[in-house]
Image 1 (cartoon, rainbow, N blue to C red):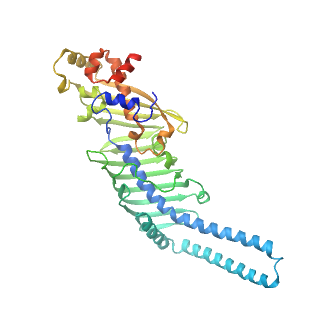
Image 2: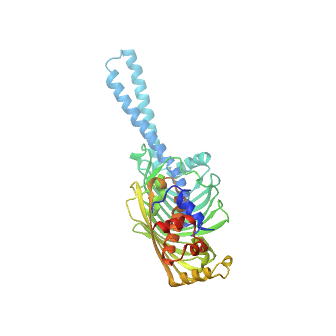
Image 3: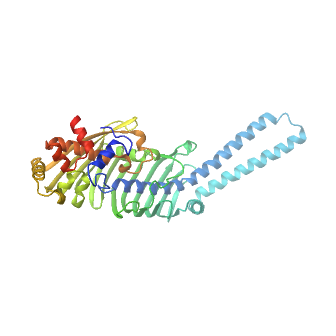
Amino acid sequence: MHIPERGGPILRACQAAGPGSAPAWPPRGDGATIAALDSLLLVVAELVTVPRLVAALLLLVIGGGVLLLLGQWALGRRLRSRLLRWWRRVLWAAVGMFGLLLLGLLLIDVLLFAPALRIALDQVELRSGIDINFQRARGSLFTGRLELGDVSVRRSGGGLDFSLTVRELVVDVDMLGLLRDHLPIAELRAEGVRGSLVRREAGAPGPARPFVITSLELSDVQLDFADTITAPFRDLPLEFAALKISPLRSDYAMLDVLCGSEARGSARGYSFGAAARSWQARGIPIGPAAHKLGAAGRWIRGGDLDVTLRCTGDRDAAELPLAVDLRLYNFKIAPPGDSGRSQPASRITEALARLGPELQFHLAFVVPRERFKGASNVGALGLWEGAIQAWNVELGTRLGLTGDDLRMLGVGAQVLDKLRRD
């Protein structure tokens, strides 16, 4: 199945399928994961300002030295004695200034690294509104490596509020690549992350400059994520025992999270994991949200859901094949309150019961790669809408019911048309 633009036939088919067919369920762990990464990367983007400044000063020194050497070679023998004396004074003054600048950077790097970093981050706060403090710091301005201990970060405004503490934070910037369009970060590692995130606006602005992180590692992460954009307001406790992503690109963060992660964690107490280009969640209780499974969900009471999302192709190809495996079990079948006690309702109940104690579906999608650009959650990709339509089509085929019975089940007209074509 190819997933077209949002608002296209798949979404319309899902809307035709009945209430709740485009849900905010399962729990929005994907959005929380991206929000957590966004907050951490905003902090890193501000920390990287310091080595960028150092790189600019070093380029100034190197460029100035080259210009002086070229000037001495081109003009040294052509100037008259009086002009030559002035040229030599300018030359030595520039050499002295560049030397003092390098000596100052060296002293800061060796003796005053932490105080200088605090001063720089105070200036960053005035510009960005991100307050960064730390208890311990070491590293090198010349190599672009920062190792911070007991870090606290606060930000309010800009669509994403957060308050975080980080036990250990390591940022290693590729100083030789700072002039590239995408900021190169060789390593980003954070341990012992605690705090809260509140997303207040959709599409909250991220780092001003795009980045590429060669290796990102998070461990021992516990966050409370709150999304106030959609009603009802919900809080999602999110934990990561470990999360590794390689690489992580700001332009395609959702793609890299889905297809390049290794993870162990839990959301609202239910565990999930990622490995070998797939994400798995087991034993998710559906509870009163069964109706959000589409048409048949109105007839399902309770149950647990296993979900696996797999990337089955090259993530850098123009179109990305994805596969979703759904397993629904421990559920009961009962007609919804508005179905009455008619004969069609009995036939639908019996047909659903004949499917067995569990329902398993394998769904395949093809998503254009450009759909991932700037996406912050799975919902923005239209995957759930596509899965709901495929679920309705497959279920309608397995039930073997008449068109009238399927209409009573809640299957929309467009899904019925697809059933007839298939």
